[in-house]
Amino acid sequence: ETLDAYMSYFDSNYKSTRAPIVIGNHFSKWNDGLYWEVMKAFAENVCGRQKVRCTTYKNLVEYLNTIGTPKTI
Image (cartoon, rainbow, N blue to C red; front, side):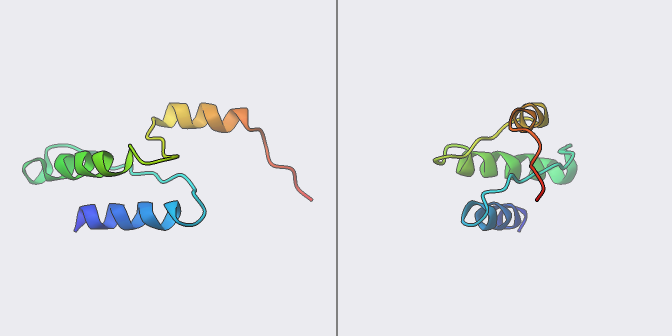
């Protein structure tokens, strides 16, 4: 169910606005490491796709700072 939720979240953005998604769970060994395994499966599924970048928050913020502030009308 968790992997399906992550994939649905990703697919909805990938097929529309292409807005970044954030999966910010604290992946400890809860439920015998289930969430770690789901995160690995998710990353293996999406990180190699065309025009997809899997990155850190730091790199995302650095990128956003390079594109500047949007101008208002």
